Amino acid sequence: MHYVDNAYHMTLDKYLTTFDISGANFAEQIGVNAATIYRIRTGRVFPHRKTMRAIISATDGAVTANDLVQAADGLTTTKET
Image (cartoon, rainbow, N blue to C red; front, side):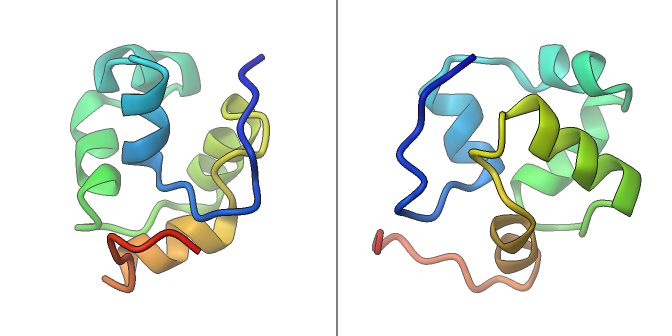
């Protein structure tokens, strides 16, 4: 289990980078292909509900549904709140 302060926005990309987890390893862990994780990390696609639940579970809630929605909508900024 990874400890993350949930007081700020945690994108999937930031989570994987922080904990030095490869996209391919994370994809395998949640049962999707690496290309899917790449597209989610870069905000190109919004994850399906099943994938979103798997991401939230695998990150112990550090990456939330709101984080994933904001990233997909392009609302992610470099400023942390």
